[in-house]
Image (cartoon, rainbow, N blue to C red; front, side, top):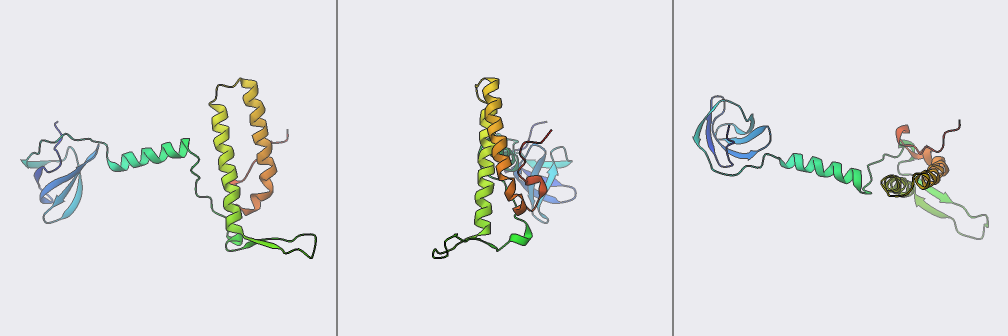
Length: 174
């Protein structure tokens, strides 16, 4: 079966006359005169009024976008959206110096939380880079232990996370 190109005109028994405006790996996107935009399966029954000779790339924009998102998520340090626990939303972190003559400092807790999650994300990227490096296995293990200890040092901040699955996890005691 030869795919119809964009611009092909068809007559569909349910939707009437229309023009193919996009082609994906499974569907034609057809703008019908009476029914507007519809997607129909490539193997649908319809009459071809005029086939446009157009090389069709059957990878849709959605497919490309999904693949790109997955690649970026896997290989970059683009961070996932990590929700802060509801009780901390809009709160502030107040740092009071021991010396009462000095001024305290306030930081929006959302800003502080964002910085903490960025540290976590950077540690994850470092972990991936170590694991895929050409280092000797023992060197990889040693560096991995430093990262695990770093996670352990950051467990104090787990109280800020909304989802327990996103908490820092240090070395498990045996």
